[in-house]
Image 1 (spheres, one colour):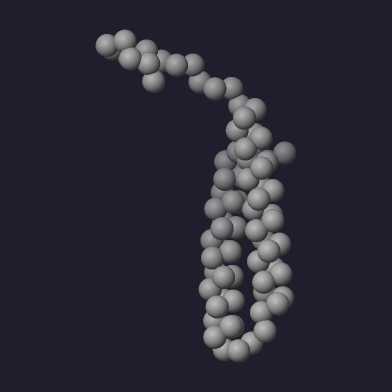
Image 2 (cartoon, one colour; image 1 turned 90 degrees about the vertical axis):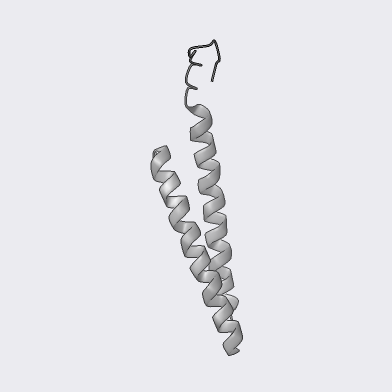
Length: 77
């Protein structure tokens, strides 16, 4: 099972790729070229990112929360 840092990096990488894909779709549309397959790829990428986000959230919820620390003055963070 991948760790939390790996999932965060993978989500960020996929989001960058999705941005590139969106720009490419716009270029194809401006050129009058069909974009059905590119849009299908983009929707699969979006579904993958959503599943990675769900996995990341599950891992994040499973981690123990750090204890609150007291600092000078009695404030808790």
